[in-house]
Image (cartoon, rainbow, N blue to C red; front, top):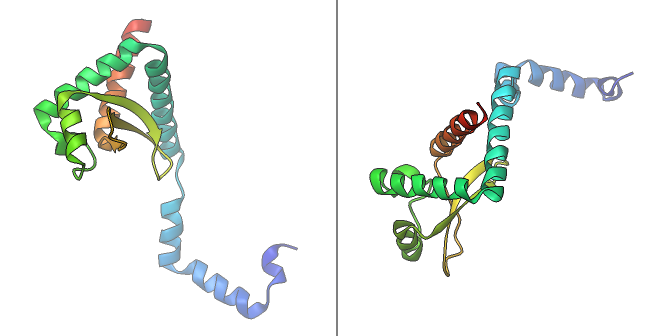
Amino acid sequence: MNWIDRIPSNERRKLRKRMRSPEEYERLRERVKGPEDLEREMAKNELLAELKFAMETEPRVNEELKKDIEHDLKEKGIEQVLKTADMSPEAIQSLESGSFAVRIETDAEGSEQMVLQPEGNVSEKIPLQRSVTEQYAAGFAALDDQQNA
């Protein structure tokens, strides 16, 4: 006997009707991830974990990443690289002068995200665009593959 057999028949009918509706089916399908999605997500998380470990253990990796971000901030602009444009003037000045720390932290959605933390009295953590984070992670993977070869 399963849980559906223990509820009243009118409730069972409502539940079955709701579960058969196309809208409900579509909503449930959106939450379910297929094996390909899970593989991509696991590969991305593994790569970001390796990058985070390399940033903590090898100062050279952190310095190179910071140089690349500084270059992109100057070339592309803050709006193209960072997720939020509404920052304090001190944070903007700190980013433009290159005095910031690069970190990888978990965002509100639970996924790993690269953030910039301006140095000084600024306590903001500014996330990079997801595409920019993926670009830097892919660059790290290519560099790591060259070193291991």
